[in-house]
Length: 277
Image (cartoon, rainbow, N blue to C red; front, side):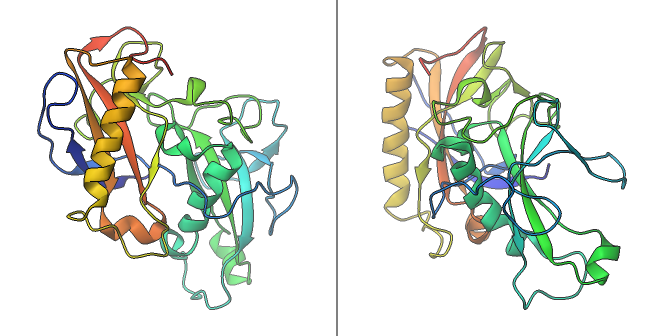
């Protein structure tokens, strides 16, 4: 599923105390769209179109289209062509050429800018080498839900608009602390866990702008914003609980990693949700 690099800042004297964190890595996340709207089902470029549900083989076998009512791992949000000047070398530089578009498509397709706080993630699919050599230049942006083994989860039903009424069962919760646990252990928020990603993902700017200065004014604003959200989420200050804001590193900014995500963390494992949603 890949990895994503972050800086992490703990809020001083937050809900009951403070901790120090180092930089680290976490799993991919998403960014709010720069353009609204969801592609109509069946629109796009290449063999896979918006709304298609897919099963991908573990090896290099053929991808199978299935009915979305059938359990499946992946759903196509949008598909498009690489720019005409894409190098002919294989594989294409998907991180630079397709990932920004896929990250833009994700929250629009899911119906919420809070996709970064969910277990729903995006990545790109592109032609096999034989098709690339024959001139195929499409890519498809897929969405999938990450499970506790950090692998895609099979589930029935389409994901288009699934976050429009809140994170629900797709809210990301971790058995440990973000960036500290390795490997990442995503768990249901209804089960025992220590960390919860909060709704209200903060957009630091568009990917086409220069990266946010991590010594600039946006960082204190993100910290203060996270503290307010954490207190509201928990219904007040709660002993034994801190919150952390996670920021993307500047190198990943052009790929669409441009959001600050707030987390609440319990010192001790809890058997159910910490907050009120």
